[in-house]
Length: 214
Length: 214
DNA sequence: GTCTATAATAGGATAGAC
DNA sequence: GTCTATCCTATTATAGAC
Image (cartoon, rainbow over all chains, first blue to last red; front, side, top):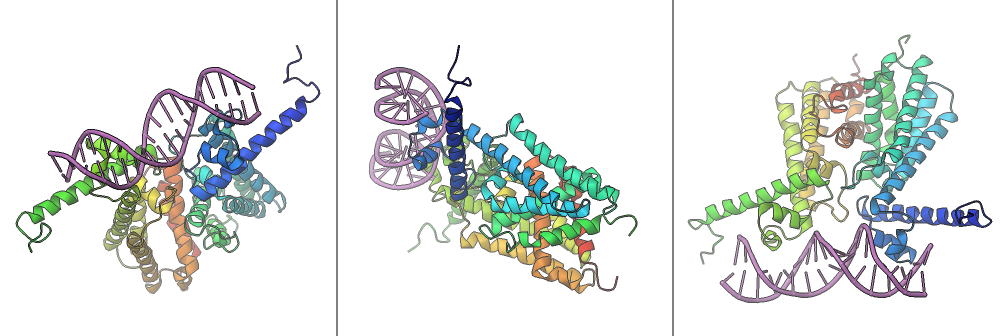
C-alpha cells in the first residue's frame, strides 16, 4: 500500500527536489521572457539553458501553457504580497493605500516579464486558468480594501470606493507599469522616467477624490 | 532610358496597383494580429488568407519585421492624425487638449492590434526603424503642443508643460489603453469598462495642474 | 526521472522557372 | 510578379528504452 507518494521516508526529500526543479524551470523561464519578450518563451530554450532535453520538462509541466500559467499565478501571488507588505508598514487609511500601491508598482517594475504577463496579454494562445486567476482577484480585492480603508478614515471621498474610483486607480497603475516597461525598461523604480512619477500619480488620485470635510 | 519605374504611361497604374496590394497585406496582417495576438503574425498565414503563396509576399516586404514596421508607422500616423483632427474641432487651450487626447484614445481602443504595437512591445525581435519611429515622435510633440497651448491660454498650471506633466499625461493615456485592451477588449469606446472613464482621467490631470489664477 | 528517437508541423527565407 | 521547390531551422509533444 505504501506508494512512493506516501509519507514514507525519503518521500519528502523527493517532493522537495521536485519542487526545486519546478522552481528552477520557472526561474529560467522568466529570464528567457526578459530576454526574448514575454511571448517568446520556448520549452526547447528552457531545456537548453538547464542542460537537459526538452521531453524531460514534461515530467514537471504538461505543456508550454502550463508553464505560463504557473508564472502567471506566481506573479499574481508576488504582486499581491507586495501590496500587502507595503500597506502593512504604514498607518491605516490613505498612507496604507499609497504605500501598498507604491510597493506593488515597485514589484512590477522590478519584475518585467511577470508584470507583462499580468498587465498585458502578450501570449497568443494563453489565457490563465481559473486557479491561477484566483490570486488576481485577490489582488484586485486587496486594492479595493485599501481604498475602502482610506475612505473609512475620512482621507478620501466615498466616490473613490465606487467602480469608477477603483477603475481609475487601476488605469493609473497600469499606466505607470506600461509606460515604464515599454519605454524605459531596465531603469530602477525610483529613477524610471515614468515610475518616478508614482507620487504625482497618487496625488492626482487624491485630488480627484478629496475628503468631504476638506 | 525609360525604365518601368519612370513616369511612362501605365507606370502610375502599376504603382497604384502595387500600393493597393501592400495596403491589403497590411489590412490582413492587422486582422490576424487581432485574432492571434500582436506577436502572432506569420507570413504564411497572411499568404493563406490572401490566396497566394508565401514567397510572393517578399516582392512587397523584405521580411516579417518589415511588415511589423509598416504597421507601426501606419499606426503612428493614424494615432497622430486622430490627435490632430480631434483637437482641430475644439477651441484652443484645454478644450483642444482634451478633445485631441480623447480622439487619440478612441482611435487606440478602436484599433487594438495597432495600438498594442504602439503602446506595448509585444513582438520579440522587432524594434521600429528610425523612419517608422519619426511619426511616434511627432505624436509626442503634438501632445506637448496641446499641453503648451492649454498652459498658454491660462487653463493649466505651467508645470503641466514640464517633463513631469507630459509624462504624467502619457501615463494616463497608456493606462486607459492598456486596461481597456487587456481586460475589456471588444467593447466600444464609450462603454468600455476603462475607456468610459476618459473624462475622469482628464479631470484628474486638470486638478493636478490647476491654473495659477484659480 | 532521464534519455534517444521521432512524429507532426510550422516557420522564414531564397533560387529559379515562367 | 507569380509560382514551385527547397533549405534550414525551430517548435511542441509523444513513445518507449533505461
